[in-house]
Amino acid sequence: MLTVPLRQLGESERAAVEKILDRDPYAGAQIAERVAAHGLNWWRSDGRIFGYGPGRKVESVIWSGAHLVPVCATPPAVAAFADMLGAEPRICSSIIGRSEAVLDLWSRLGGHWGRARDVRPNQPLLVADQDPAVAPDPAVRLVRPAEVDQLFPAAVAMYTEEVGVSPLIDDGGRGYRRRIAELAKGKRAYARFHGDRVIFKAELAIVTRRTTQVQGVWVDPEFRGRGLAAGCMAAVVHDALRRVAPTVSLYVNDYNTAARRVYAKCGFVSAGSFATVLF
Image (tube, one colour):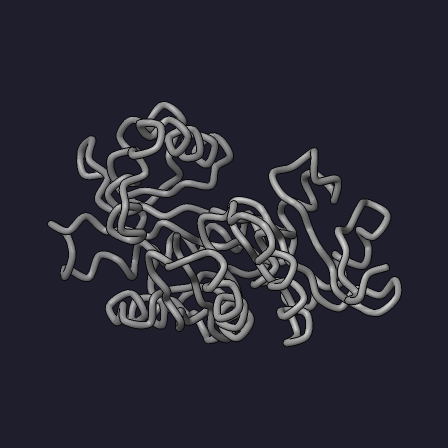
């Protein structure tokens, strides 16, 4: 008999999981997208979902796969998740979510999993639900599948700059290139071109019925400081709100003051704080 109300969840509890994800549609977006695509049968997806709550009630969930993502995780739930996960080898490359839950989880898991490569404790979570006051840059458009070769070097540069390691290390970048190609095919990759060169890019990395999460925002270093980013980002928000989801969300490092100014100009407002632990 379990001494804590913690268990892996299956398809029969999908409604309960969706209810929790709706309580925090921004922190839960990554899980919500997977549940919508695959359900809760873990062998059909790339991870497992565990729930915490008394009896058959589910109050908190955590996604365990390539990323570890707690949602609506109360302190008792975090303690239970940490006890379970600490008994297993680490399989995730990062822990992502609301700051309080992520930092509490990491404080409990650090002794089991060793040192993290980086801990980012305060990443403002931002949301926009209306058109920006800034005029959209008409040169920003969706990347066509045939243009992935032009987009890929910019994506590698962004990833390396943001994460601190190159996405080419593990498999020469084949998996990362497939992901970029999928986003372009799904009309979720935006760019501004200067000839054949990408000088701005952003992707709708996650799409749910409640929000789309923008990731991979990048301006070519040569073109920074020219006031380019606000109009480009406004174009992304403008299109995403009309075509994809009722809100656009993202999270940004607190020290990236230039990006935060751009997002404020584009109408993004605070929805709390994320934290990320990178391995």
